Amino acid sequence: MAKWTPRHEAPEPLEGPVVATITGGMILWFALFLIQLPFYGWFDDHGHLWWLWTCLAGGGLGLIGVWYVRRRDAALKSAAARDAALTETSGAE
Image 1 (tube, one colour):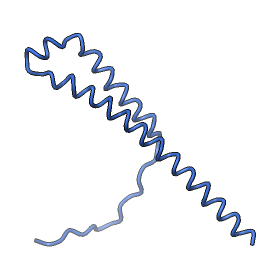
Image 2 (cartoon, rainbow, N blue to C red):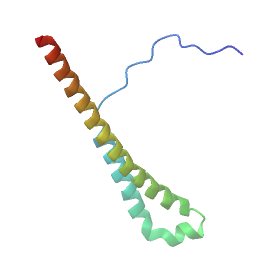
Image 3 (spheres, rainbow, N blue to C red):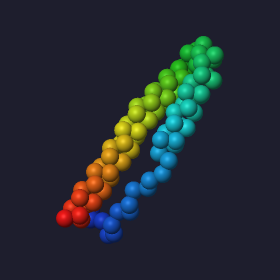
C-alpha cells in the first residue's frame, strides 16, 4: 500500500462571521427542541425520544462553540495587536 501524498497545497482556511453562524445554528437546535417538547409522549411511544435529546445536545454544544470561538477571536486579535506593537517598536530603532 502506497503512502498518500498531497498533489497540491491545502487552501487557506475560510474566515467569516463564525460567531453569527454558530449562534444561528444554536438557536435553530434550541428552537427544534422546544417545538418537539410538547410531543414528548409521542416520541417516547414510538422510540424516537433521541430526536428530542439530539436537539438539546446540539443547542448545548452550540453554547460551547460560541464560547470557544469568541475566546479564539479575542486571542487572535490580541496576538495581532502584540505583533503590530513589536513591529512598530523594532522599526523605530
